[in-house]
Length: 199
Ligand SMILES: O=C(O)CCC(=O)C(=O)O
Image (cartoon, rainbow, N blue to C red; front, top):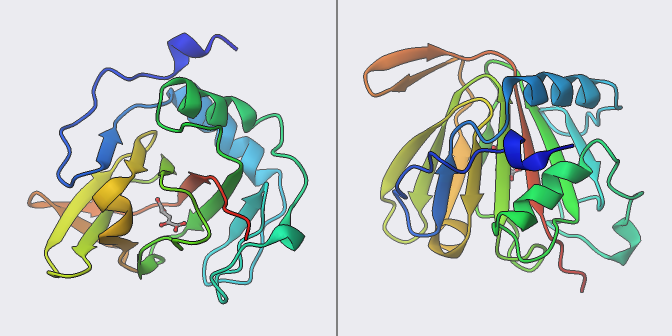
């Protein structure tokens, strides 16, 4: 795969929050279609309100924990180029070793949270497929709120304050309002890349 042509770094938007990077069109429409097809060939877990797939390491959402017993089989070949490019482009110091795939149907979201600090290294990246949706960021101390439209094929990278001082979440609704526009949600799939910290 000729990765240099497939992932764009050209149009990074200015950060609204320290440590937040948003890169539109990180992958091509062809890659997006292929990824969705590959994901849909795999089994889904139904233990949350939304369906998920875990690769590399399982994460226990209820206990907010990863430990040595939660190692899964290696990250599959069809996902490896995406972890590689995140490292090659400098978003991650080391190749991400865990990927969680989240599926959001219209009306589904994820509650506002800071990713488990003792479980995961500093950088978290989320690749959006399918529908656009608005992600809300709330400062953990001041409650200041910011919102960002996550477009399909975009990459969101959180580190520093964006990772540790701001919560992020997606409201459970069917339509988003953004910059005065009403945006109907469709099925969205997000791949979240992380490096686990094993106690
Ligand atoms: O849907 C996303 O883009 C982010 C998912 C997320 O916040 C998480 O898995 O903790």
